[in-house]
Length: 265
Figure 1 (cartoon, rainbow, N blue to C red):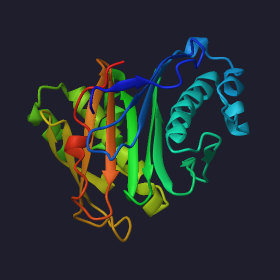
Figure 2: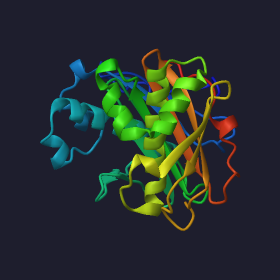
Figure 3: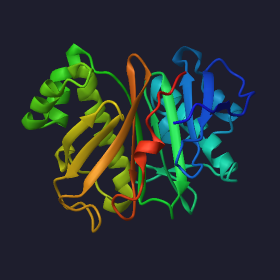
Figure 4: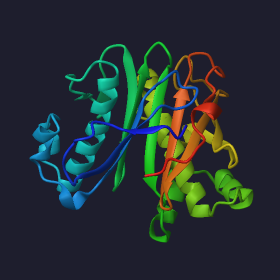
């Protein structure tokens, strides 16, 4: 991503959203990306109407943290829609809890304990887009993530590859990339699938790219052997960010130029 970061909406007006940034990624055709840092301690339900965000019943009945994360993600998405002339569109929730974008757009929303982000582009440009933010796993959650996310072969690669990053960071990056892939692929697959549908091949720390291979036929275009590239970066010392762009014809999206610089907040 380029460093031309500009404030979005300047007067969003509460301590809840500490900072909201938009980035025009290099090589992206101008697809806007929004990243917010938010404060759970400053969240109150009244922020939904203040930000012009619909407050769905299932979110209203959830815990405060879930409400805050949902709101922060939708604030980012609202900023994206304003770039496309859809300022009044309310992003719905699909049958599998996926965000429902306006006709002609595809996109992705993500959030963690402190950050939220959104990215969208014309549906004609890509087959799918997925983004994900994760807090780097700690020792207490390492074993569960290993059991859920990676194969023994992938674990062995992560322990050997070094890449200037510690094992927990690498493990979290792989988890995040597979989450991004799931989001990007969902429009095609329309079903849940396991983490072993994607196999890690390589991590390139200099270019901040990861290469994967499909291990299952997930759709007519996402077939066994198709390679998938995920870009990654670091928001802070404890948070990683990944993006997967699925092109209609494999190999036509230059993700290297799209996503390789740090995002600073």
